[in-house]
Each structure stands twice: as structure tokens, then as C-alpha cells.
Image (cartoon, rainbow, N blue to C red; front, top):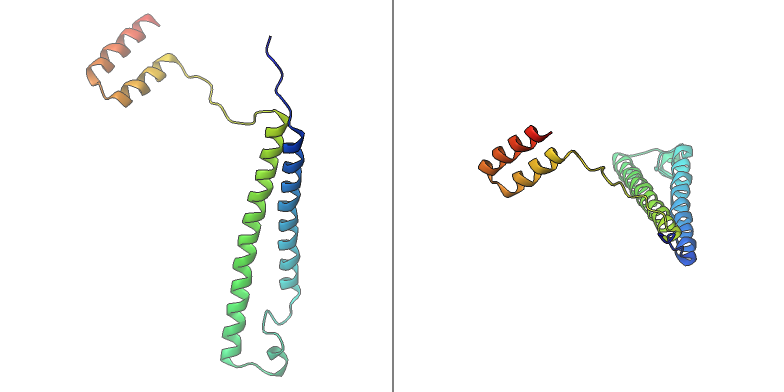
Length: 134
């Protein structure tokens, strides 16, 4: 009789906390993006009210571009952290969420083995013999 998978409460709690951390990072990124959306000067700051020079526009554009790049990196890192928390939680729960390919027909498995060994003559003879049996 097979034993049921063992649960690890500490791993589940840590996985949930890591997931919440990743979710918090994603929500923080969304909050910062909303702040950029509401900025009527688009990063120019006080220079937008007094008149702008080409240098002010260039610096403002650089700041805005850097903020967008940091938002992108924050969203990617937040989603990776949340994903790691989910995987840690389910690993601690004793469930397996890996993708295991079902075994293929024996002819395909034999073809793969023979391709890896590179034995062409044995390959042809073995495949013909297997096909005649099937």
C-alpha cells in the first residue's frame, strides 16, 4: 500500500508568504504605473510649468524611459517571485505539479534510442522487426 505524500506546514507557510511578497511587488508596480499615468508633465517636474528647454525635455524623457524599464523589470520579478511561492506551497503540500510526458509507442522510443546511439544498420533492422511484430 502506497503511503500518502507528506505535508510540510513550514514550506506551505513560506510559500504563501513568498506568494504574497510577489503579489505585493506586482501591486506596487501597478501603483507606480498609475502614478506615471496621472503625471500631467510626464516626468518634467517643475520645468513643465516655467517653460522647457531641449535639455529639460531630454532629461525628462530619460527619466520616464528609466521608470518604464524599472516598471517592466519589477513586474517580471514580481511574477517570478509569486510563481516561486506557488511552487513552494504545492511542494510542501505534497502534490506534484510537474508535467510528465506519457510514454510513447515502443517504436518511437526505439527510434529515439537508436538515433542517440547512431547505429544506422541496427536501426533499420530493429525497426523492421518491430513493425512486423506489431
